[in-house]
Length: 392
Image 1: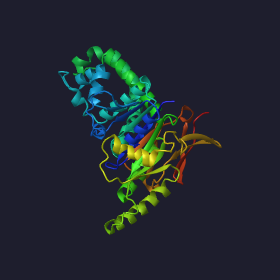
Image 2: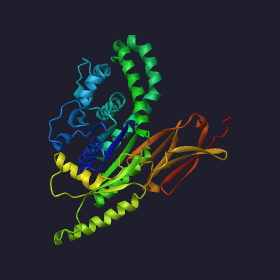
Image 3: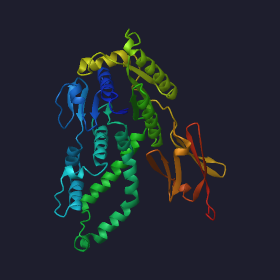
Image 4: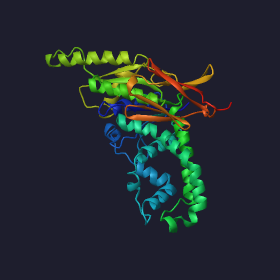
């Protein structure tokens, strides 16, 4: 089965070199591999010392590399919806792809849609994704679910509006509603979003790996990152601790740093004891070029089964309990007082920290209401009971 591996973490922790090492190992195993970057500050070309274009290019046997340009993807893969958005945003209809790309989330969305298209159409056995720093990656991964949720709410209304109002919209409201071609593109995009969300959350296909370093601020961000990824129901199945100093340096200057690193390495292993943990040493050279990246493969990855996906936490799930139902969501390292929960129409909204998620209720629970919740051992359990006056 084809698989996708997503590498994320705080900026500057070594995501690109770690992802590149996995790509080298995969290609060395004879698997046709694509290493792709969604970070706008691309550096895969620098790592492999090669000028990369708009499409995937072969850098080694079995290994292609691609630095996604969202503007290029928008212009070439979705021309009809770009044309409509241009007309919607300006009177003259000459809004550029660059201006449309400034809409929050658009670049992230088209980067993911490109990966989904590659997964479906190309013959790569493994796709390894080098993502942007933590906050951007979380925005990237949650965007398909968020946008598809909004489109599901408004899309039926939108189709009626196009049929009824299109003939008079421009004259009466100075707004040009989507033409049939654009609506077809929007409908296609909605279906692509649903497919994309299913692809990213399929634990048999997609794995998320976190790269970190043994420093206090990075460790704390790593724990938050893990919690948010679980909030959105992604499968995190690996932790990579990078830039570990050698214990036998024989230099008094680094004695304090060695003690600090030892403390936080222990902390990370205890906090993520359910995950496979890999330790990457601090190298005495810049990790640039195939030879340098291959050192990570030889020192850390060789002899280890890093490409078999692991299910380390249960998926969020609804279950029948007594006369009601219960929803269980895994939120490791969340603070009980920071969790906000409420029911909005047919959705349950969970907010913690800077992120919130709308979870649609199954049809069977549309007549049920939240009766209580508890948070224990990193699990949020929400209890539903039938609302007063609601029929079976």
